[in-house]
Length: 158
Image 1: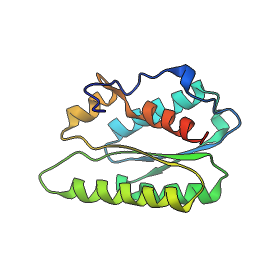
Image 2: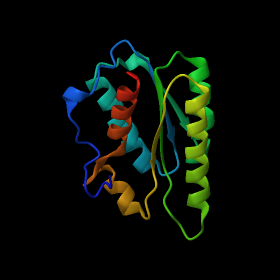
Image 3: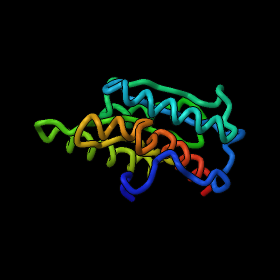
Image 4: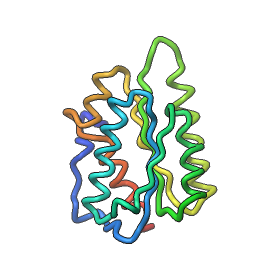
């Protein structure tokens, strides 16, 4: 559903399982950090809200969105995780760079989902401009980091 029709931060808390006793990885891109670190904050707050302890959240910071899958794989190998959440923001520019990055990352995360026995969550914003990104990083459309955390919590019960 388009975020213009649904706030990313609104969800039924009763339908989200507890994350108590589980460990989660979060990989966040530094590129557009004024946006991605807001996604990270929303993600962490949501995991805490659902019982995940601070020491059970393993965070890796990478230079850009393209590097998310590699770091996600490394986190999954280094820690016993229930899920890995990948957060980034690729704003469309004057070239097709965004298409190559977003497609590559989505495909790589899909492959990690198949390779590992845990879910890898695509929490990457793919906006046309910076305002659309800000609107989805705690602005008028909520926070994609919250949505990514909720997705991870739900996927861990499958």
